[in-house]
Amino acid sequence: MGYLCCNSVFICFFVLLLTGTISSQQPRCPFNYIYHLGDGVADNGNAIRTLPFGPGLPAARLPYGETYPGRPTGRWSDGRLIIDFAATVLGLTRLKPYLDTNTSSNDGVIFAVAGSPVLDRFFYLNKGVTIPNYAAPLNLQHNWFRRYLMNFVCSTPTECAGRLGDSLLLFGDIEGNDIHYPLLQGKSIQDIQTNYVPFVTQTTINTTRELIRAGAKRVIVPGNVPLGCYPYILSEFPSNDPTAYDDLGCLKSVNNLVLFKNNHLRTSLDSLKLEFPNVTILFADYFTTVKTVLRTSLPSFVNNTLLKTCCGIGGTYNYNRRRFCGSLGVPVCSDPSKYIHWDGIHLTQETNSRISQILVQQLLPALSCS
Ligand SMILES: *[C@@H]1O[C@H](CO)[C@@H](O)[C@H](O)[C@H]1NC(C)=O
Ligand SMILES: *[C@@H]1O[C@H](CO)[C@@H](O)[C@H](O)[C@H]1NC(C)=O
Ligand SMILES: *[C@@H]1O[C@H](CO)[C@@H](O)[C@H](O)[C@H]1NC(C)=O
Ligand SMILES: *[C@@H]1O[C@H](CO)[C@@H](O)[C@H](O)[C@H]1NC(C)=O
Image (cartoon, rainbow, N blue to C red):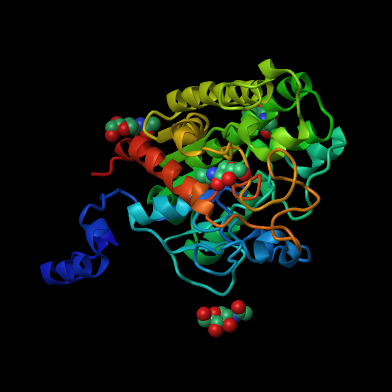
């Protein structure tokens, strides 16, 4: 919508009346499509469509989707995701999950699949680290993206470049999985820092470079969230040493690894900017943003539910990976909007909304939107 609709003053006025105040403040941006690669943070229905295991995943069942739209859609939350909120601001809300063959609606496509890492299956096989069978590593999502463009959008490289140039490309959050799979399977922080992180960054940068060479003009590459503040990590690495935790109760060692990884990525993105001075390349700081949301929430979390899971059971953080949200007998909190964490790995709609507001405010000006 937005500036597309204004063929006549009358129609524009009518659309504004229908859609209310958001439209009247809607920014005009120099792109008309969104393409999003990533993991469960942005998955709007791909993992549950991955055969044969997808339809059995938790996100295919209630209480996923209970707040919005009232039924499960494959989103890993009680409701909307960060990208859903951001897309509403941009007026590009019809984002189809790539694996949903039944819709043609098109402001863009989401290729993100929950549980996906950046590094491919071959890499993990060599390291003896298992990744979920439904995961779609970055190279696979990149192939899907190319196939999608060739099959449905454009027939020559010039045409495809035109479409890429008319788009906003989003990566990730996706690299969190490249930290948590080895971490939860017994690899040390030092090992991950030395033998995983450099390849994660290189692969992300190489994929971004290929897309820029193919015509992309605007790319947002997010860093990781503070995994050390997430119930699934906190439950796995309990410590009796109070100095292991920061003032919010997050694990310092894990967050320091994430910061190391994010800084590595940020530095590489700075070099990429020098390589392509005419392309808008943005780093989205999910780490600081989630920390800010946690910190500003502190006063309202009287019974220490700040780092607890809304949908879960047992333990300090109300999280048990063997009795995950969506399983039989696992309770849901009565008001997800009072929680940061939804299922221990993913966030509630309310948290997603707050993260989205902060990031949109930070990034929108750099996208030449007015
Ligand atoms: C496809 O979408 C239509 C209209 O929304 C719906 O009636 C139909 O059941 C869907 N088909 C499948 C296979 O999901
Ligand atoms: C990234 O690209 C560079 C230059 O083409 C290559 O040397 C390197 O091996 C690539 N890295 C990965 C992890 O694919
Ligand atoms: C970047 O933009 C400037 C000004 O529009 C143009 O002269 C230059 O050729 C562009 N450079 C590249 C590498 O596209
Ligand atoms: C906090 O926990 C206590 C004891 O379980 C309970 O009585 C009280 O209602 C709780 N307060 C809130 C605001 O949830």
